[in-house]
Image (cartoon, helix red, strand yellow):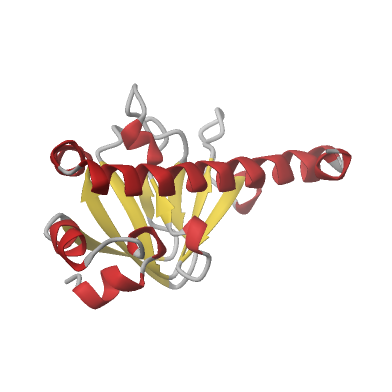
Length: 165
C-alpha cells in the first residue's frame, strides 16, 4: 500500500501540493519482484509509469539471439536513492506507447509503484498544474537517461565522448 508519506518523499512529487499528492496517491498501485524477475519486456505496451521505491532495477536491451539478458546488456540502473533514476516507463507518454527496453530486478528484491498511463493522462488533462509538474520532471528523467546512454557508448567504444564537449 502506498502512503502519502511515501509520495511526499519521492522526488517526482516534491513540488506537489498536499491536494495534488492525494490525487496521485489514488492512482498508485505497488508490485514486488525478486532477483532476476522481469518487470516488463522491450516491445510491451507501455501501460504504466513506474517508480522504484525499494531495491534496484536494470534496464536492458534484449539480444536478437534470444539469449537471456545479462549485465552486459544493461543500459541503466534504477534505485530509490538516485532521484532521476527512480522513474521508468516514460514510453507511456510517447507514441507508439511501447517499452523501449526490458526491466529486471537486480537486487535481492525490489518494489515499485505503478501509475496507469490512462488514469494519469486523464488527471493531467483535467489538472494542468499536475500535468506540467510531471512533464517537467519527465524531461529531467529523459535527460538523465541520455547522459547515461552517452556514458555507456563512451565506455563501449573507449572514447571519452563526454570530455570532448
